[in-house]
Every structure is written in C-alpha cells, then in structure tokens.
Image (cartoon, rainbow, N blue to C red; front, side, top):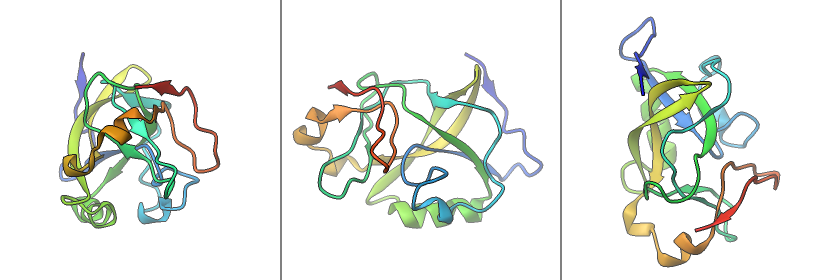
Length: 148
C-alpha cells in the first residue's frame, strides 16, 4: 500500500475524510469551506469499521473497531488547520468524537486523512449490534447493510 503525499500548495493543509452529515448534500456540509473537496473520485476506508445509525437522532457514528463492519464510503476534503479546527468544534473533538488519521482509498490511490470516530466512552454493545453500513445518506438510502 502506497500512501500519497499531502500534495497541497500549503503543507499545513490536511486531508479530511467525511462519511456522514458533512458530505455534500447533507445538512452539515455547510461547515466545510467551499472548493475544498478533492476531485479523486470514489473514496472508502482502507480498513473496515462499523458505521451505525441509531434510530434516535439518525446521526451516523463511525466506531473504532478495526476489521469489523465495512469499508466505509465517503468524500475527501483538503482543509487548512483553521478550517479543521472548525470541524473539530462541530464534531465535539475530543470529547464527543475523536479525530484520528486513517488511510483512505480513492480510486486506487491511498491518502492519509483525518476522520471522526465516536468517543469510546459512548460505544455500547447496543451500538455494536446495529446494522453496519457501507455508506450513509440522511435521505434513507443507506446501502449494503450487514449485521455486526
């Protein structure tokens, strides 16, 4: 596996992988600055993780349980450190979600990107029993469910 360098004009820029309400077309997308999506095609996590959506609230949670779940699909963005800190506030990092770097495969090219996992203190057996999703859409088009 080859990880692509952070090929940006400013070395302080960071890749961010989004899988839920920050994706284009979702309600929290407005928190990402315009023109920051990286045009690299379809992206998914290299490792499998459980992506679950509890009935209450309908907000997706990515759980840090490697090789459980699916290769989660999402989008890749390139943001400045200041923009990343705004997303941290939205996600409640580090107490609600924890920002963690993971490898992300985008059409055969692997990028090291930040993503947000639900804080371990909130991960319960009930969450782990929910169907694991490959992708999330608030419009009810969750794809490729598996039971964990």
